[in-house]
Length: 83
Image (cartoon, rainbow, N blue to C red; front, side, top):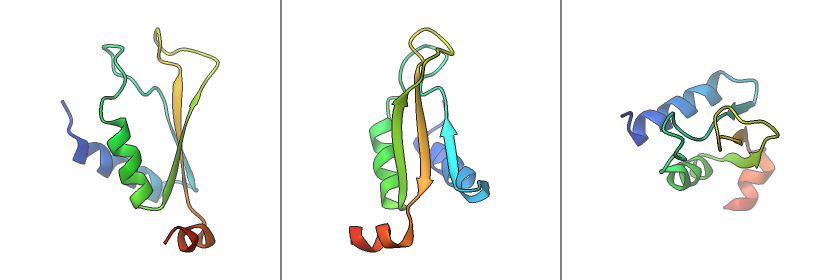
């Protein structure tokens, strides 16, 4: 199993090479279980000034896999306001 640090590094790399938005779908594994460290990941992204939103989608990749995470860099004025 790939660990939390691996997933953090992957998401940061995706943000680095993106035009500003990254979408992750699905948020569950092949075992149909939700990613168990999602809350930790959301906190990590927040600490890196990345806004991450979880939203339902109108389709399922697998049974119950119907949520997507959208990540965007915070604008400079939003970063300053948070500090």
